Amino acid sequence: MTPSLVLTGLSAATMAAPVGGYGLIADAAIVLTGDRIAWVGPRADLPTAQKGLERRELGGRLVTPALIDCHTHIVHGGNRAREFEMRLEGASYEQIARAGGGIVSTVAATRAASEADLLASALPRVDALIAQGVAVIEVKSGYGLDLDTELKMLRVARALGRLRPVRIVTSFLGAHAIPAGTDADSYIDGVCLPTLRAAHAEGLVDAVDGFCEGIAFDTAQIGRVFEAARALGLPVKLHAEQLSHGGGTALAARHGALSADHVEYATDADARALAKAGTVAVLLPGAFYTIHETQAPPVQAFRAHGVPMAVATDWNPGSSPLGSILLAMNMACTLFRLTPAEALAGTTRHAARALGLADCGMIAPGLRADLAIWNVTDPAELSCGIGINPLYQRIFGGVA
Ligand SMILES: O=C(O)CC[C@@H]1NC(=O)NC1=O
Ligand SMILES: [Fe+3]
Image 1 (tube, rainbow, N blue to C red):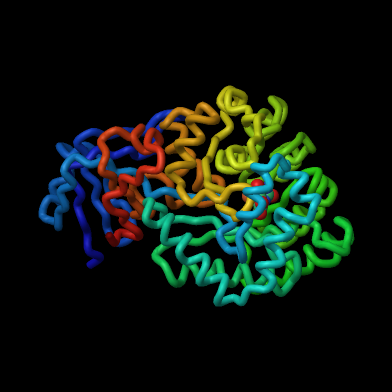
Image 2: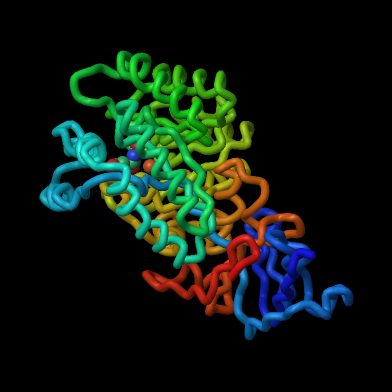
């Protein structure tokens, strides 16, 4: 008989609410059976059959779904602290990129690192997110830009999920930057697509991503990557409209992408297209903040057209060295004017949707027993704090 556990003395932000709400149940109880949620509701309504099971009294604490960081680059070599200084000396993100800095400088460090080095440097990043109540982390490739290193990155990503109590979802991001010595079209056709096929054959790819931007790839080139993903039966997502409007968001919608990410320069028409396609807008306030961007994503248009908004760290060594999902929530509220309820939906229900996961992101019967128990009573405290981590305990797959 699978062991069961009854949690009582809590308020539950189930996130199984209509748009904009917490789905809050005051004085609630939650029944876990194995790695699944069996029941959630007011403690007074707890089914009598559950009353004899092991109970855990939580002293009135808030319980949410465990958090999901749906956009990270946490596998990488080296650091970009020098660029941080350059930016403070006035160089723009694009100027740094065109001067050989940016993504391609991390590519050199990642190519030089061994698989063991990359694993050793990524594990503390996973541990930091787990300590904030995270149960699912999306990890992208994209700092190899050659077959061996892209495969190395994705193997490390898979190893993270074997070595820690966390679910890792991988995205192939071979179309992240144009390596030195080639052009975009030759790279896409000669390296990126063959590498995608090799990575997929090895079971390393859960989704396919790209960087559609003036300093990276255009819609035609990304379109070829998306067609190859479709041929392999893989979902797609896209870094789109981060620094300018280039048509990436509309392209993502046309391909039924899981998500369009950054989207600072998306338009009302793009928001309509995302809504029609059911594509999630992933907001990445850490990059907006780090590169001193001034154009915020069209949050009001996303609301008006019913586009689900997710929030993630974009944890990477350059544009968003942000290791806190909770601070990302705070930034999404403070910089993009999301409500705290939208920010929490952005790291639970909508983040799950951005990864194509249907078994998590809410507290509801049948979903995974991945929960976060907080030393707070009001869900808004999770977004209000700046650099504060009020996690009391994380339950992963029914195990504390
Ligand atoms: O700066 C980096 O290393 C990655 C930045 C990250 N990748 C991308 O396409 N946009 C970003 O912000
Ligand atoms: Fe990114």
